[in-house]
Image: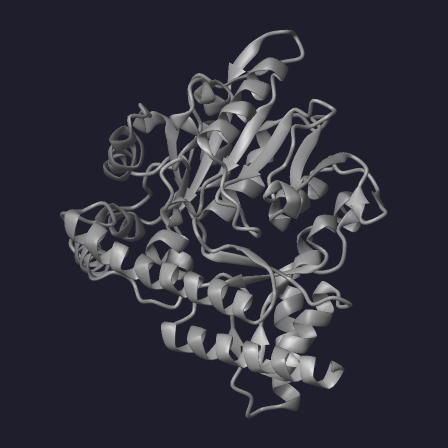
Length: 416
């Protein structure tokens, strides 16, 4: 009989968003007429930009013609897209990234979960707390976590992010080899300034750590002092891998496309005291385990960078940014403290006194028919908070805020 990978047995409960979905489904079964509004899972609602649709239609026609048909594409991504990424996402900001350092994928979630494969199983991992669950769970699956004791894994260093510090983590105390950073942050919405990121890059250079930098929400940055890429910091190419996504930027949640940047300058040590390029290892991993993103999807992603595409996408992003402001202001008017929503599509809300994160989830579901995401699912420091997202329609976002305010007002009246 085959044996299981027992590291999977260390995973705690079900995946957070699956648990949220299960609770919502049970409520719908009991209340089939319920008109639930989701401000929970970060899925977009606006349709793809017309420039993207046009490009994908053209690509479909090419696939139906003998002269322009394409089979397997390069595992790293087509050069036309990698060149567009290098030019528009990096070179336009004064950052020199070569197309050979860019790897197109089916989304940032897959990349941040798979990247740990190129590192030693003995490497110590540090994550900010609260944290996007994939960072932790993928390392648990790989056997790096140790036992789960007192709401955390023994082998992972948690870097607490407290409200008093703007939900920004301090430097690690145990010099981990791998550090996951997300800015703008999911779930707290906090964004790291240039000075913040400079501190992290200097720390990584001093200790030999590698920063795994998730920039999936960089398109929501509005403040000038918040870098869109970690490579805007001198020396970052020697210590960081960056992840990007078209999901929340261009509405590709159902299309699936993203990319990561693995600079040639980033070197990893071998047991024989030698060094190898992380780029070389990741390239081999992708060539072995991944057949690449479809040509049709990559042509759609390329259209994101066209003048027409950029204009249309900014119009869509402005809807989500406005929703974030509506939620942030509405929550504060309701008497709750909140952060995020400025450089981020996420609003991190302190729950009413006397409630846990899941208590407030149940309250919003049953009293306002709104879905949020309990903060406790993002780690020990997430308890006492919930995450709201700005990805619904403007009409439903305003309705959700109105429902929330009325439900909280009723609760205050009952307690008076």
